[in-house]
Image 1 (cartoon, rainbow, N blue to C red):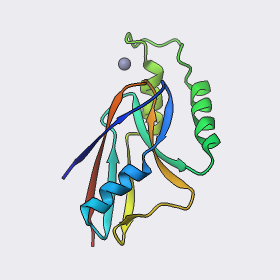
Image 2 (image 1 turned 90 degrees about the vertical axis):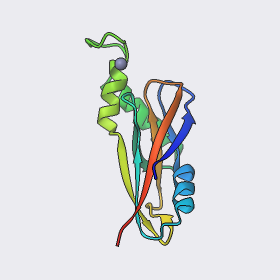
Image 3 (image 1 turned 180 degrees about the horizontal axis):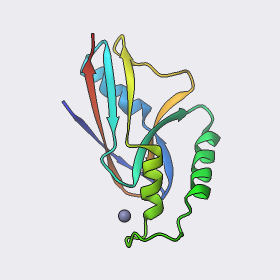
Length: 133
Ligand code: ZN
């Protein structure tokens, strides 16, 4: 079963911690051992895993991505959001996380983040939990 989560982002660029939402879906799946696949079906948003203890890490990532790919630039994409498309490709559109004993297995400081680059808007995250041996 594909779980479709709806989320609402709050600014143009944002790293939203969705770890509790992902964990909840893993618990509801009742799968003990497997993989949790988290996929973002958008071209101007992505998914990434990084530190969720100190929020300044999130801010630094967004600030440096802005320096690498400024909103205004010599782009040809007519919609005006080329930077968001480029950042989405840099970050990637999926992550796969191990599931053991019915729970997500993340490093101590890791969290799963929805990466918004052209918000604020309503977005979806698709999650699939599958059994493995
Ligand atoms: Zn576009």
